[in-house]
Image (tube, rainbow, N blue to C red; front, side):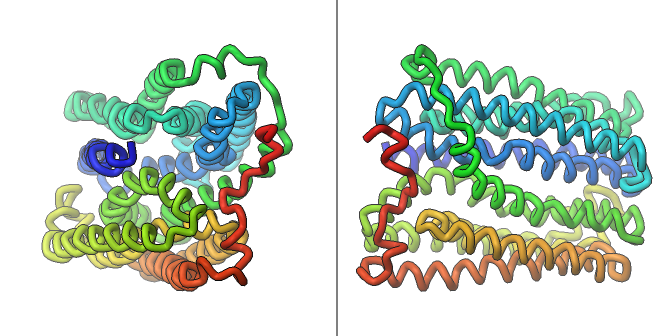
Length: 440
């Protein structure tokens, strides 16, 4: 099974992620060329806001599901597995509806904050987006990561790409029209994720009487929510904050395109890390430093090649790539270079935060991430009005590089302490799941 996951499974997931990026990137190119930088600005801000809000609406339930549902099934605790699934759906629905209502109300009362009602429209799809994200994580927890990724990586962005590509030159492409099809893709994704859940869920879970522990689950999932939300903010908040400064609308659009292009390399790690994490958990639990060192060395070697090739392409062809969006986007080349370098650092060390969380350093990880997000926001407010897209890119680069180099340094130190009896934080049970929870 491990060989399948890290071999064939890794390759397929990478292909799905690359395909999803091509579809999303292709949609952005069409919209940018049709609407221009000033029109694309509204769409980019709306999508960035929706991405952050959907992460918040999910309440960490999906990430925690990948950890707790397999454990419940393993210990034949069918009732709690069913109870958690129901609890998570109700929690996400409640949170997303409240967030959508507040966002839509704020947009209607004070449209000038985002300079458009498009944000108010896109958040209407917030419950759907959050449920798809959660559902995909549950399908992964049920042992079917390829099925979940096929829906979220290909089907969801594919619906919008086909619709926008077919409409180009025939109808006027507006931000409102674009976010409608954006939401339609998620609606179709919700149906498909539900079908995959029914196919992958253990029949004994579905037949069991649900057992609920809502406050316990809420407490345990909160670190997953905090980190996921902060990471989402780290990657998207610059677009929203830059919009709120005195920077020109074209600068917001240029930075959004530079950020999307320069973040491409992160797909490599994001699409494969989830396959490494279960093995990493087992290796940590067994204190198997040699196996961890071997897999870490292999992954770093692979990432070095990916990052080197990616940066070579960016520095030599970056202006040409940006020119595909339109001539006005070429000025974002400095921002693209800065974002690309920082994202390569992120990609290279992307497994380290998971390692730190697995050895019970959740508080450290969340605090460091929160500080760097605050640095990002502050620097955008300072540099954005004067330097536009380049200023926002500097803010992103400084915060991301600082965060992941800090993680790398602390992670290396903790790895060196593994196996020493004096480090009780590492030597204790590292899965951080109470035995009582499974009636052991």
